[in-house]
Structures are given as C-alpha cells and as structure tokens.
Amino acid sequence: MTLSKSQTRIINAMDDVSLSNWRDWRWQIRHCIRDLETFEDLLGIELSEGQRKAFSKTVEKFPMSITPYYLSLISVEDYENDPVFKQSFPSPAELQVTRYDMSDPLSEDKDSPVEGVTHRYPDRVLLLVSNVCSMYCRHCTRKRRVGDRDFIPDKETIGKGIDYIRRTPQVRDVLMSGGDPFLLSDEYLDWILSELRAIDHVEVIRIGTRTPVVLPYRITENLVNVLKKHHPLWINTHFNHPCELTESSRAVLARLADAGIPLGNQSVLLAGVNDCPRIMRKLVHKLAYNRVRPYYLYQCDLSEGLSHFRTPIGKGIEILESLIGHTSGFCVPTYVIDAPGGGGKIPVMPNYLVSWSTNKVVLRNYEGVICSYKEPDSYEPYFCDRDCEKCDLQLKLDDADEQKALGIEKLLADHDRTIALVPATNERLSRRNNDE
Ligand SMILES: *Cc1c(COP(=O)(O)O)cnc(C)c1O
Image (cartoon, rainbow, N blue to C red):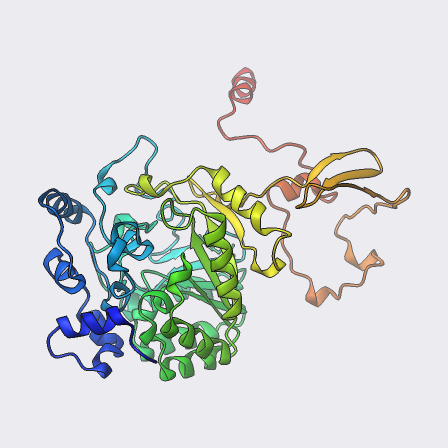
C-alpha cells in the first residue's frame, strides 16, 4: 500500500511517526485528533476566530475524535465541502435543537430488557458490546452517548446480555453493535463470539462496525482469524461516500470477504454529503465491486443535533428511483426510516403498482412504461388454520418455526380472528369502555 500525498504530509507534521506506527490501529487510536490546534496543524489550515468559538461551544456538548487515517482523506483545497470533513468535524448547527428532535428517538433504552440489549423484533436482538468509537460520526444516531462515558463493558455486564439471549430461545440472530465492537481486543471478541456460538438457538451473528471506513488497520490478519472461527458471521459496515473506499479500505474488505464473511453496508442519507443520485450510484457500484452488498440506506434520525443533515424523504425516494432498474438489483439498498418511538425500520420506495382490477394489475417500470399483468382466473385460496399435518404443502414440522402471527400479518391470516388493530389511545373505543 502506498501512502497518499496528504498521508505523507500528516505523517511529516506529526512527531516520531514511522510507517508501521501509522498502520498500527492502536497507534491511530492513541493519536486521534480531539482538539482544534492539532486539527489545523495537521491539515495546514487556519480557521477564523468565529469558527474557533463555534467549535469550542459545540465540542462542549458533542466532542470530536478523528483518526489520523480518516483525517488524511480530507481534501484540503475545498475542505468545508469535503464529505469526510462534514462527517467528522463539529458544526455549530449541531447545537440547533428543533421541536421534533429527541435524545433517544428510537427508544432503544426503553426496549432494553437488560443493560446493553435492545430486543425490538421477534427473532433478533441488538447487543451493545462497546461504548467506544475511534471516530465520532457527527451524524451518530446515539449522539446522546458519544464521548460521555467511553468504556468497554466488562465481562459481567456483557455476560448478562448473553444470559438474556441464552434464556430467550426465539433469538436466532444477534447483532453486535456499539460503539464499535472492533475496538475490543481480539481476545475479548473471541470470548463474546464463543459464548454466543455456544447457544444452540443463535444461528447468525452480525457485527456492525465502521472500522473498515475510519480505521482499516484494525482489520488485522489475527482479527480475521478469530472471526472466521465463528461462522455464520456477517459484517455490516458504514460507507457514506465513494471517496471513503480507499486502497487501504478496499484491501481489508477483500481480506474479510476472503475469510467467507458476507459484507453489507448501511449508509445514512446526509445533506451535503451524499444526497445526490450520482454520488449514491457511484457509491453502490464501488461497494459491489469490492464485494460489499448495499444493505440499508437510512433516513437521518430525529436525534438531537442532526437537523442540518436531514433531507426530505423525497430525496431518498428520488435516489431509489435512480437506482431501481437502472443498475444491478443487488446494488440497490433498502431505504428505511427508523420509526421514532421504537417502531423499528420501515422501508419506503417509489410506487410501482399503478392500478388493479379483480384479475389484472397495472404496473409501471423504471422507464415509465406502463404494463399489465394478468392474474390467474382461478386460484383456489386455501384456508390455513395452521394444521400443517393436513396440508398438502410439504413442510416438515421439525423445520417449521412456531411463531404466532404479529401485527398486520394477523389481519391477513386465516388462523387468527383479529379483524382490526386499534391504537391503545383510540377515543371512540375508550368511550365504549366507559359505557359498559
Ligand atoms: C436494525 C435493528 C435490528 C436489525 O434489523 P434488520 O432489519 O434485521 O437488519 C435489530 N434490532 C434493532 C434494535 C435494530 O435497530
């Protein structure tokens, strides 16, 4: 791997740096840029007095931390518009709190049965194993926590989360997140992964990490050797802009993919960074070329301090419109809004169903061509009362997941008599109850 010009410049501006230091992730963490003077020094730029004041006020509430590696991706010429700068350098706009901002918009703290676990969906949980990040993303959805108590939970705390998973048999998928799980040592990760693997009902383990983007040197051969002992293991990372796919990043993505780890990417739609169909298309193509499947595109959450990053939902739909049909299906991420209040991720996309009658549907494609699809004249709908023994469809009962119908699924199912879902606070119904 060769060093870029700005990497060479930064290395020269730092004392006592050798190339092997630069590529040592622990060295990178020890040398994270957390103050303005170092930031200016290393980039060779000078901010105005006003900018400095605004900076100090902002970091009092939301601190800064940037790895030297990630800093070196900022192009100094037009740094104020640089996507890496915007994701890493505090903006005074973070202090604008709007009426709709919340500190925990996804109610992760409320859906937490034990410390460090968020159990929101029926069959999978989020396990927070780290409260540490190397780079503090300015758009962090858990901004309320950034920097306030940087620590790695001890074995006892994580063990309680693992105990919860052990005694909750419906959990078949565990998503390790944080903070960044890859800031744990290889040994510690190995311990957590072994504990989870020892649980029979845990089929899949996922890790969410931004280290391939902000600290690629973390993905060492030793780490990859640890990870590949615990398959099936999936990794989701977080690239937001094509410029983040550097030579170093691409090399570690290849290393992870070669270890048989399926890679996904979760981007956040950010005003001024990637709210552009051409940038997004370039990003998803570069990801696919590097064996990373674009998984989610997130609408920016309603967390406090993010208002300057938010776009209308229409921007995301416009981006999807420019992807679906135009490029490989597996390059198209699912665009999701994480529902405020804890409802989970809700997918949104352009409408393709234009109209329908009893036996025909009218659809439009990405080109605007309108076509019709003739549905079968006869289809024997069969009544499903979940008596699978009597059914002709072949499902070995051992393979059948026993899950009761949930939510909208209830309204569609024959075997459930629910005919309406009613909000807990429906006025008309509370009147009924009072009458009784
Ligand atoms: C995103 C998320 C998951 C995983 O969702 P998938 O759609 O399966 O990727 C699980 N739990 C929580 C709390 C989440 O926010």
